[in-house]
Image (cartoon, rainbow, N blue to C red; front, side, top):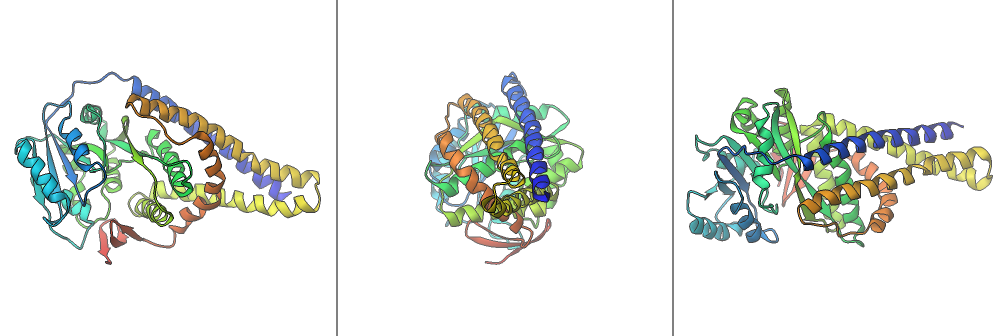
Amino acid sequence: MALLSILVAISVIVCITQSLSFRRLCHYVEGELAREPQSYCPRATVILPCKGLDPGFSENIGKLLAQDYQNFEVIFALASESDPAYPVLKEICDRAGSSSCRLVIAGINLQRAQKINNQLKALSEVGRDTEILVFVDSDVIAREDFLRCLIAPLADEAVGATTGYRFYVASEHNIPSLLRSLWNRMSAWEMASPQYAFAWGGAMAISKSVFDRAGVAEQWDRAADDDLSLTVAVKRLGLRVHFVPRCLVESAGDAGVSEIIEWTNRQLILTKVYYPRLWRRAIARAAVMALWLTCLFASVPGLLADLNGVSLTAFLSGLSVIPVELFFLWRARHLWQKVLFDRGQYLRESFLSCCLALPVAHLILPWMTLYSVLTNRIHWRGITYELKSPVETLVIS
């Protein structure tokens, strides 16, 4: 009887919370897509930290430099001239001229993540006439009005920072990558919440005055994370992070099992250290789903021993979570397709493949999430970090 009560309660909670969350997400995204473009175009500096050559690197940089935005410059930052990206970027800068883009060498600092060290070096080169700071990753494929869309909401003084978001698209038969896609898309639901929305470092913008007032550079001095620490600093001022669906970035999501585990572990631990409020929400959700899974399996012996009303009702009540989630997976798929269609892009994986991956996600993801309670160590682009606190990062190797 206890199993029945728990499974019924969890099923009701899942149905109610997903209904409310999706309604909020749908209303937010459709409202943003219907918003008319604004003419707010202050002087902007785009900071792009690089390490190595991502697929389509030169093409991505070309699209960034060709933005439909009249008043901006790009500062590329590398750790050293030995980086494979150096000759490519140097040629691009020489061809474009110093008024459009510059290249700086940041060196190595073992007290913070290399990405942040590159960003801080670039920040020291920003001119006094810059009003807006934009941070992007080298694998971002920017639409022609990317900067205009990302910067426009900053005209509202209640907006502290704007952000896009990464959207992983995986091959149909790559189950680990499909799991990451599902996990990442569910995280995107939080972007419609003023309470939990967060900046994504691959595409985020902030006014220079807010950046300075929030003390973001000081927060980054010994940090391993740029976006979540910026999020917390901005919200501490009473300002909000504004998600821009038009700046959603589609990325090829295929990867091996070890890379997916490393990526998921890194996202959770960075959130734990830099945005604990959101991490506690993820832990609570994972704990509920772990309890649901445990109770569902615990009901099976009774069901096999005797097909009585209580055992069967308990099992079916617990199993009802799956069709509820499939329904919202289908609705969310149509919503994200609408966003990507606005960019001239399409979802590639089938709905069936996502349906088949969902039960596997329930078996694995809650435990991976709960594992983040046990460690603060991450591995990122060949470097291992121990995150002691938001302002103390130890480079292990």
